[in-house]
Length: 329
Image (cartoon, rainbow, N blue to C red; front, side, top):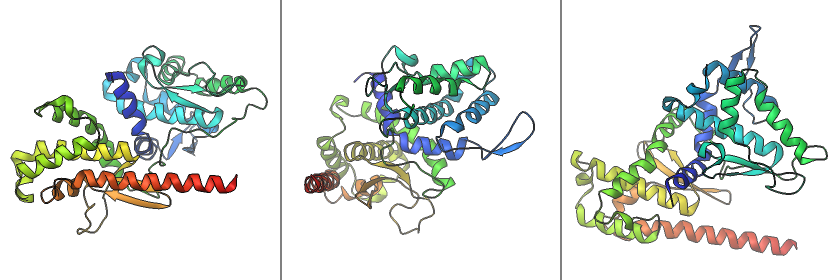
């Protein structure tokens, strides 16, 4: 997997949390129109939100160069997610990427009247740059209108599409503290893991999988005799990398979502800790990498066993869904 592919999968894998954080933390609650009227800012991924979104973008970026300024990368990635998800819901399609389209950034491959994913790519970053250059507040909507024409008929999508796996963070299911933490933390996960693996004896062996978790469990058990030893200043860097590796491995394989334990009781294992949430049926299963790392001091196989648990639950979930579909047919 090359660097572009890694960045794309990180973009998609973190869609739920990053998009939710963008909506909650970066989009305003109200917006002052050019005539001085203050109106509520729509954040519903609806087509009617696009003119207001574009006006807000123009107020933030005087020139296209400001859009690609590295200091604005986090905001722009959130904007790409919001704009792309709005298009997906309005016309159908899927997120995609390649080295040529959209400056190497993720883009939307839309549905058309010819079928799913048959349309020309919609390069979201290029559209944002064009909008900031044109400064008409009409570009985002014009792109959507053209895509709807290509759908034929009434211009309505033929299917429901989204890049979200579990659902966004919202004001109802999260908190400002959690959003602020995850906004900072998620950007450190992949770089932190990359740096951590390079410090290991065989960096190439640290693939996201059960075998690596088993090796890490043995390493933790051999390296530490107690939880206190793990918490010394000298071990901060190693433990931080190990926790990220544990969490990201189980998250990817088990289709989970990074969360943060804000506003929880002090004796809750998730309190003030990043953890991974899995939605299985209508139930939540939370796994705390820091707690899993500690259990390895007693049982070196405990981290891998945690992954086995979620895999087993996913398999049972799939079997139940298949049985339900069979009963209906």
